[in-house]
Amino acid sequence: KCGKSEGVSSECTEKQELESIRRRKQELLQDIQVTYTSVADRWSLRTFIAKCKARNKQVSMGRKKFNMDPKKGIRFLIDSGLLKNTSNDIAQFLYKGEGLNKTAIGDYLGERNDFNLEVLHAFVELHEFTDLNLVQALRQFLWSFRLPGEAQKIDRMMEAFAQRYCHCNPGVFQHSDTCYVLSFAVIMLNTSLHNPNVKDKPSHQRFNAMNRGINDGGDLPEDLLRNLYEGIKNEPFKIPEDDGNDLTHTFFNPDREGWLLKRGGRVKTWKRRWFILTDNCLYYFEYTTDKEPRGIIPLENLSIREVDDSKKPNCFELFIPDHRDQVIKACKTEADGRVVEGNHTFYRISAPTAEEKEEWITSIKNAISRDPFYEMLAARKKKVSALTSL
Image 1 (tube, rainbow, N blue to C red):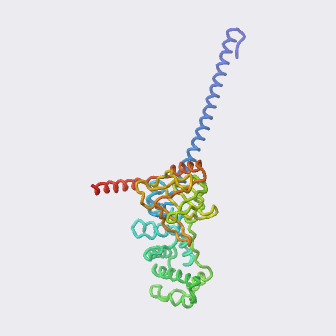
Image 2 (spheres, helix red, strand yellow):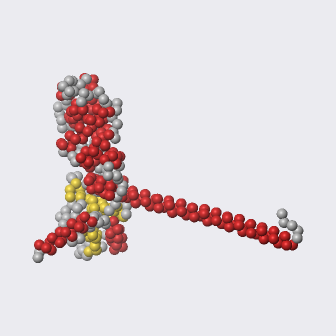
Image 3 (cartoon, helix red, strand yellow):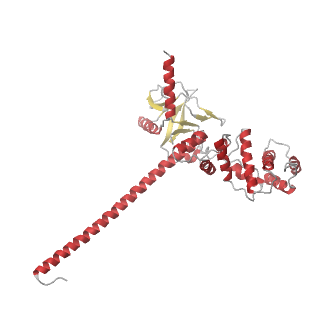
């Protein structure tokens, strides 16, 4: 406590003021720390969100590359650090299948090189067939991809399935070969019973007769065959929809979209199309309500320029630099539903206004990516051409 004398009172006042200053300083330091932490947290959150958005965009691009070329898609994801170069990691990616074309999955799994075979077996092991009858197991398996058309690929995939089924259900069959043969018989039965072009529908007795002696020389239990027959008869196999072909999910938050006029390749007519720019590709649709595009133009290694056209204003072109006669790698859907390669050496497009033309050109320029291998190859071709002309 402070005394009554003037000197003591003055000293006491100074101490109180000093203590007050110290408290205020401490409060300010705490406020600064709280503010710093808050700013740091917000900055960290923004950085995290930006990284997530960039990663998701890279993954989306990898899926599209996979759907166009499975090997290139997998390589892109590995090189981007989004996928480990192991059979287990790739198998998990294919098994989840989000946004992937089921036909492309089947083609990749059916390849005969050693690494693809490892991926195939890792993929099959992700399926749990314990206590399922053969039809139930086949439904699960055949829903995760589409069987390719090549006989050797189908053979490898069905052999892997049979081995996995027998591992999950020991004692059901004498040998995995029995499961393999019966699996094919069930798939053929499904076609025979549910294809309207097949008039002579097999009976249960004929199905039994077809499968006599396949169980290591012996017959399979009649109840087992009857259950398989009835399971297929009552419910056919469902062919999985191609998630990668239904591109609706691709077009959320595009870089740009709008109506443009596109000049045809062989027939030089102008047609109004709804264009969407996203993930380094330019898609065009006949109507905004269409789920699948009429055409896809990957922008890799392309260039863009303004051009004058006597028939349409506000034009620009997509082209391959230094290779004016080369067809751009793109695809389109014909009127009969067939997907074919495009035949454009350049794409000429007209925007409604000069302002929109400039905006489209800027957006497309930002979306164009470069493949260094392509540029190396182009440089080598140019060098060889120069040498041969000497």
